[in-house]
Amino acid sequence: MTGKTAIVGDGDSIMVFKAAGVDTFPAEDEKKAREVLRKIAKEYQIIFLTENLAEPLQEFLKRFDETAYPVVLSIPTKSGSTGYGVKTLKSAMERALGVDILFHKN
Image (cartoon, rainbow, N blue to C red; front, side):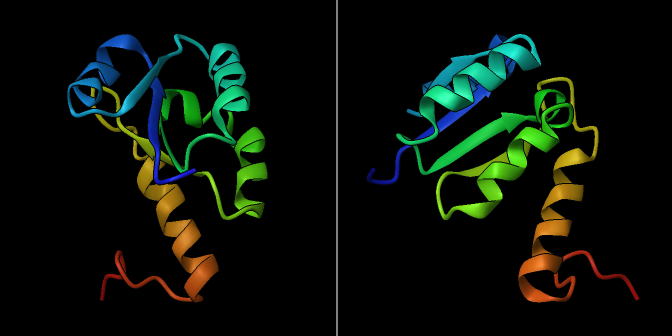
């Protein structure tokens, strides 16, 4: 595993990543996304997952928090962000660092 990156999501949201050389895996629903993640988890270090699939799979995704790789990151779909990705990033940072260094507001 040498820094391979993948994205899982609906076809329209992931096509731009394909143009950038990222391996793309279409998944129109959470069942398909779960199947794809199980298949590719050992091969990729970074896996982007669209928010619309990541949120319903949050319990399933917790298994990846226990290992160094893959890192699974939620990203918005082509329709925009639901805020789920930012929320999970904030939570992960607080767990790792004990403080919110990016989103802290005075």
